[in-house]
Image (cartoon, rainbow, N blue to C red; front, side):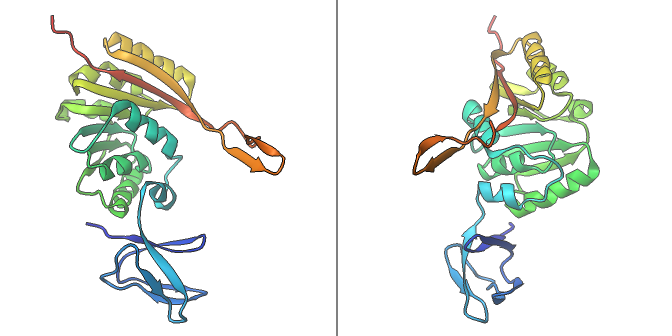
Length: 247
């Protein structure tokens, strides 16, 4: 398993493997092979760096990007609204950078994710290695909609970040375990509406669409108020659940 760690000093962060050498303006740092998170290591000039374990927010900053990744706040909504947990199986489409897949893999979830672009898929596989979840996240090159006949379900969660999300949702009863969820991330409200229509046609329950907005707070001597920097809109998340009838 990948053991890359963060080597930190102030606001500076370096992603390294144990045994790797880093040359900085503060000196040469030779990271021991047996280094552990929490230790303090020094350059040959005696400058100290702290060793930290990679966590979710670190992944968002450190993984190589092939586009706009899903934001941590959106990932939090997916986890919170679906209850996805260790031991669950997730089918994902639109891997991209792989931030969502990496977060889920680090929760102990088994993820099968599809990415259409071969180059993006290669980057995502490397990112899974950086995140240390290559054993739990299977990055496949291809279009999920075209590959559905070869997908072995059932899955506990179906996550979609693709233009054809609505078409996949129509097929979701064939993919999900009873009580399983769909979570579709869409940049435009028209696509969210299509997902809702598809979920209704598939007779899913608990259909709900949320716009994700986050506002930062400003605190100064005059008082406290939301930041005027911007609303912080990212996209739309549509959730639905497969609850087959017993009749």
